[in-house]
Amino acid sequence: METTHHKYMREALNLAQEAYDNHEVPVGCVFVLDDKIIGSGRNRTNETLNGTRHAEFEAIDLILSSGEYTSEVFKRCVLYVTVEPCVMCTYALRQLGIKRVVYGCANERFGGAGSVFDIHQDPKLKLHPAYTCEGGYYREEAILLLRKFYVRENENAPIPKRKHQRILKTEIAPMKNN
Image 1 (cartoon, rainbow, N blue to C red):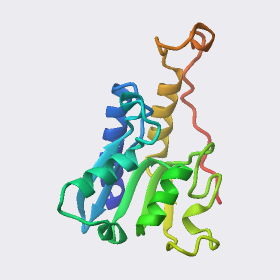
Image 2 (image 1 turned 90 degrees about the vertical axis):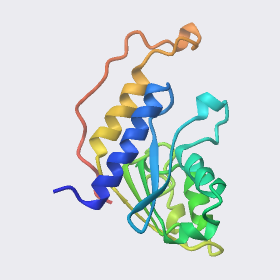
Image 3 (image 1 turned 30 degrees about the horizontal axis):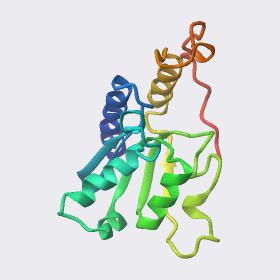
Image 4 (image 1 turned 135 degrees about the vertical axis):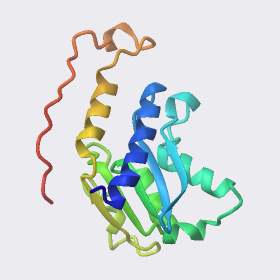
């Protein structure tokens, strides 16, 4: 039986696939309020040539520009995102007072919600409330999408950066227990 978390993570994965199909890092997210998606986003950093256009910021902007909600809504929302939010997104979510974050796979290079930094619950950041995070939902699917992206050839890359010999690894190590 599919849980609520799986239902919304599936929506986020669909957006991540859309990002991949558009040559973006495959990350997608949905913000849920009272069992209803109020906003969604996918990475658009390459498309916009703007490094801040992560899936979370795209969804936040969509929600706030709708005119239906103020930033207060995030205090009652759960964010479902395919990859653990990066440091930038984790702190932005904390500033908004997000209630909870559920993610697919860890972000072992830039993670701000437990993999690298604990920004989501750092007691030194007293100005904004901490929030809970839970990972591992559709983890394997999120990892495989990322791997597919990173082995794909980028025709605009300089010759030394080409990926001719890269092979897609499909075996996934078990999730680490924190």
